Image 1 (tube, rainbow, N blue to C red):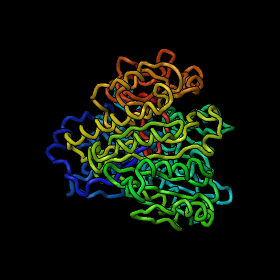
Image 2 (tube, helix red, strand yellow):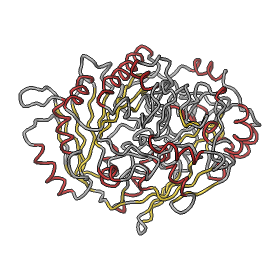
Image 3 (cartoon, rainbow, N blue to C red):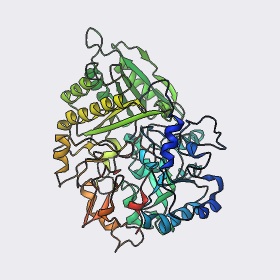
Length: 573
């Protein structure tokens, strides 16, 4: 989940000479570039092409005009310099690029990455061939069938706006710039999960391009075991180009808004931990329709974002009495547009902000855990004013689905504490302070998770730049553990050989086994695994994360919703 806190107003763009130096060291494609050039024209961008930086999602060279829409990179912490960026217009072009990669890139160690919403740091790797899906972004709603057909490059905001005229909705993250592919394949958390379930609980069909370039379909009745695996198993089986998603009735007008508290903890003003406990009493311990986010900026106010996912009048009757007696800086509770307002409360990103984040799943809410969270965002602990801890109520419909119903098996947690460090890209001193704070907060929240790290959401690999820091003692304890369901989106760079899929591990291994699923399994030679070899692999009979970094395993990709994967590790036989 890549949450984004409001950050600094201005950013210094990278100097052109620095970019020129990096581009001079970019490796060329190992295969004939002209083969892709004939297919894509100027939609293939290399370091020698004038739109290369725009295709990277960067805007540093202002004298270069882009000749079409582009997406900004969500996390600007040292964005990579690919060998080439292939922006495709059709499924047939996806097949052609994947086939090209299998023929020329994979045998020579050049990775194929997928970019969609671009929340992922690893969708734009150095010396990679990037498959950019942003133009395969159509969303078609079928009101009578309560169904949406979503392109693999669509963003959450596209789905929201298509559903709004029909008074329909489905669970879809918390950030309009979220890429649907990453959100769906990893599980898919959002405001509506407590009433409608995860996104994967509403996925009806998926179309994937697999390693040999073949397009296949999976559903409950066709390739059913593969369909089970993609619902939480991540981008380990192919490039998702289309999703069919179940929709639900939800009027555009809902009862929602923000309550901003001064966390003084004296007189009539609540402390941060009191605000947090009050928030979870209203949401987690309330009806499924009651949901929201608790946003705790460092050295700042405590912000409740509240939503009643149902009849607005019922929502007013539920929330209004619970708000009396607590003075606030702001109270915007009232009628709001779910699709175009509530779903846009969070910062969209793409403005030059750099982030480093982690998180911990909590099996329950305790006063002690909330006190610790409040302490971590206090002025004496804060690395800056733009970092934040965001807490989400889970449960509801998600917890009523069996653990083995989908590959996503982490359904019995009650809350998620997402720790988001935000800083100015390129400021290494500030970055060091922020990274230390993020990792310290995780270590202090671990005792409130289950057992030896069962609920750990580590530095979210797909969001973060690969770290060079040595693992903390708490991380090392996790790395040495082999049993149980420990960790989801594990510690970037510190993952060890842990089971990240819990009780569903063996079944995922069976789907991935090349003897049972020819063309779907990958082959990773561990002696060649390098800096970015962090996607779960089958090796010596065990599905685990290679030691170079973290895994994009499952916790719902709440914000992380660029679906980016390293296909060299993921799907090639």
